[in-house]
View 1 (cartoon, rainbow, N blue to C red):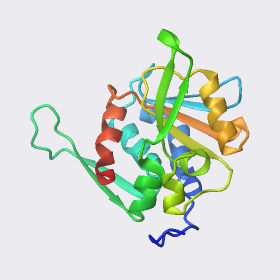
View 2: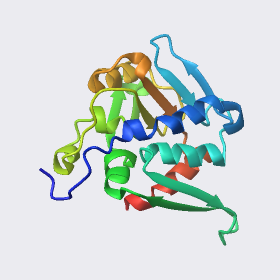
View 3: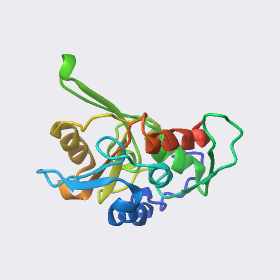
Length: 198
């Protein structure tokens, strides 16, 4: 049992549902693309084949934190090449950052030039990741709808989605994968929004 006295009733996968629904329903506003793979898994592209944007990055950052964090953008930063300031707060920082946002789920498939590797972050980790961190935290979520965020510049092979589905013990239709390349505006915001992890 964890000495951190975490609220085990706090389910990041439930808390994040309205945020994922907003991203899906307002895809054009956020400049993201949403589609279903043949397997039934939902894929949200936030910067590979579409532009994505700052607001998409802000929302994806809150999704990464399992709906337990608030991320705001303001045009107050004193940096010449990046005028935006990202402010992050969390109501349950340990669960939001370590239990969800931290990119700790190593996902890979294939070998050589065609090999795919990504670190997964977001609520799916609390459901299916085998990271020892969850034993230490004494925190898990039961199977259900979930979302994983991958910082990648290409779509993962079907085997990656299947691996997440299998480990979470869910149907493919219950999984959403959000792709945020680090070179995109959305990816840049969600990386900077990891400031509480440190």
